[in-house]
Length: 381
Ligand SMILES: [Mn+2]
Image 1: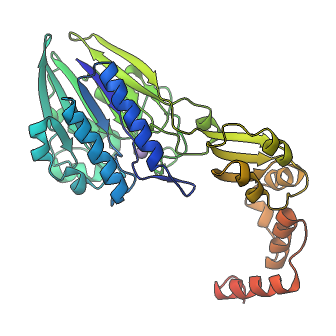
Image 2: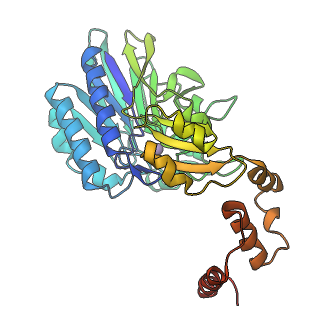
Image 3: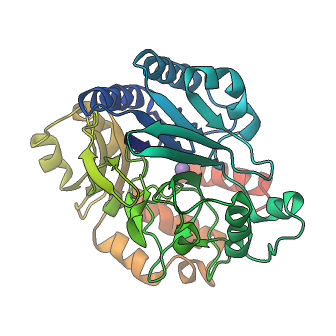
């Protein structure tokens, strides 16, 4: 059987105030084409389908259209909720959808639902574990040691009583780490990471599964072994420089007889790239290419450029962010975020800020407005 592993769709997401809905529609159409061309039997959807627990109408329409298309193509879907999804809302209609081979498990109730499919190599069990907090595990499994995430999840998996002699596949949305290193983030995950954290699970917890289709980390990567993978987000959702340098992919998994699992990564081609460009404003404007792309521009001009954003937007209508890399910005950076404010008065700080971005101190009228606002906000007396 052939699967495609998707996750972290974040339908309805805005990146720096730009709606990604058109880009998401485009990439889902492309994924549907891949499913057709690669003769994929089933889609694994590892959570964060929506960006918000109450998704926008556009986002719901998009997902509805995608599911309808897959059902019309005769493909099965195996989906779980992520931390961004509302478990109840995602669970809605799931028993009806199952009649169309669309299996959605939005909420954990102490058991991991399992759907068994058959092919030439016999039964294949597909386990659907939605996002859960370790604290919820004890509620359903009172005997379990839930003092750490790792222990709680071992209890959840043990409780499922998976038969390791048969073929098993797990779809989940959690923070899973390898023995040697932590997964690399893409910068758009919006999760709370505690340093030296306990809210992560060792990848060996899932050793009994032939393939582990994971969501949560937005950078595509294998964890511990090739067949335990984060799919990564299908589009770039952050302006993190490393993230912008990546090409997004989707894994296609071919499962043969027990132990025979092949993973192939297929690159995705977005409607518009998110690009980081750098240089003097004049040069960036003069040498503009692929102007429909989303742009993060770093200006290297030593002087603050008048109306830089508006001027850049004339050639690149989708500028997401603009910053400077020059002597002034480096001096500010070198001092660090905290100490730069240390021992300075409100007026000194505002004055320096204006000096940096505008090249001069605020005028009398500007000071009056700033002071009034600061007073209202309780920043100054
Ligand atoms: Mn996510």
